[in-house]
Image (cartoon, rainbow over all chains, first blue to last red; front, side):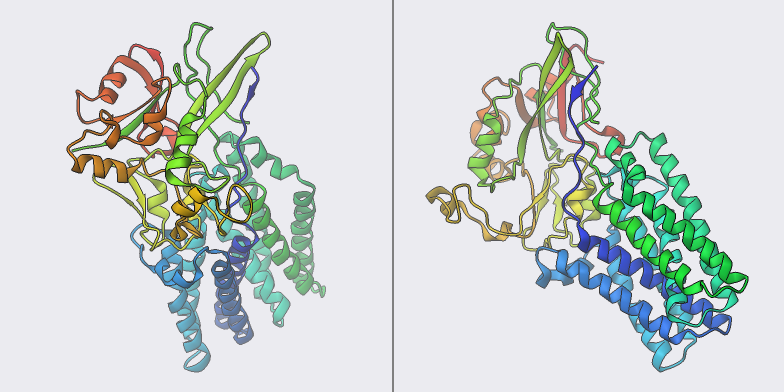
Length: 278
Length: 217
C-alpha cells in the first residue's frame, strides 16, 4: 500500500541552537577536563577560562535565537519541569564557581566541574524532552549528548594545553565511548522505527566525513599515547566532529513525527488502514 | 469538572478547508500559519485509492509536553483543559514547537501580510504585535467560549460559545463540547462510534478525537 504523507523536518531550531549545544557541550566538557587536569597535576587554568567562555558563547547563541531577547530573564521561571530553565539556572553558579577558582582558590574548579556536569546533563535532557522529534526523544540520546560533550571537552583541552598522558588517555576514552554510544543510539533509532529522513542521516555524505574524522581522532589520540605528537590534531578532530554531529542531529535529522493514523475512515470503500508517514 | 474536547469525524470531512479559512479570518493568523489545518492524505494503490481528510491543530492535551518544556510558564492549562499561551511571558525560544508531536505551534519573527508589505484593512484591524516573535497556536477560541458562557450559552451547542472552525464546518465533521457531560454531543458520539487519538503513545492524552467507524471498540 502506498500513501502520500511525509514527516517534516523541524525548522524552528537552526544553527543558533547548534551553537548553544556545541558551545555548552564543549565548554562544560572542557571545565570537567580542567578539573581532571588540576587533580592530576596538569595545566588547567587556561582550560577553565576557555571552557567558561565557550559556555557563555553558547548562551549568546540562544539569545540570538529567541524571538523576544529582552525578555530572556523569563527563562528562569519554570524549574519544576523545564530542562531549559534548569540549564539556565546552572549557568550563574557555574560561572561563579569558575571565577572563584580563578580569583580565590583553584580548588573551586571541582565545584565548577560539578555544575558543568549538571549543565551538560540538562542540555541532554532538554533535547530528550522534545517529544515531537523522534531523533531527539530517543532514549539513548541523553547519553550521546553527554558522551560527545566529554569527547569535545577533553579534545579541546589537548588543543589549548600541554597534553599529559592522563589527559590524552581521557580524550581517547571519551572518543571511544562516544563512538560506542553513537552506535547504540543508531540501533535504537532503527528499532523504534524513526522517520526515514532521520535514519537517512547515517548515510549522508557529511556523516561519512564525520565518521572518518571521529575514527581519525581516535587513531591520532592512540598514537599520541605512545609518544607521537598528534594529541592536538586528534583533539581538534574530536571537537569538530562533535560539533558536526550536533549540527546534523539538530538541523538534518530532526524530523517530526508526522500524522500517524491508527485507522482510516470506513466509508463503504474497503477496510480501514493504518497510516504512518515516511 | 469540565473538559473541553474536539471531535473530527473522518467519515464526514470532505476537505473543504472552510474551518481553516474561518480560523484564519477569526484569528488573523499571518501567511503560513494555520492553527486549524486539514491534512489531505492519499492512501492505497491504483485503482483502490482513497483520499482522507484529517483536521488537525493543537490537541489541547491533558498532559501537554509544550507546557512542561516551556521555560517561562507562558504555556499554561486552564481547569477546563484548554492549553493557553501568555504572549507577554513567552520569549519565543520555540522549545514548545519542537516538543509538540502535532506540529501545532508556530512562530513568526516579523510581521507578514497576505498582499504585500502593507496590511489589508482587515489585517490592520486585527494585527496584534504581541504575537510577533512568540509561539502561537489554536486556542479552541477560548475568548468565544468565555464570552458565550458569560452570556449563559453552552459551548458545543450554542454557536456563540463554540470555536469558529466547528461553527463553519459544512458537513458536521467537527464537534466540540464537554466530554465530562454525558449529555453533550461529544460524549454521545464517542460512546456510539469507534475513535482514536493521534500519537497516544507519546503520553500526551490529547483532547482531539477522530471517529472512523460505527460502534465502539
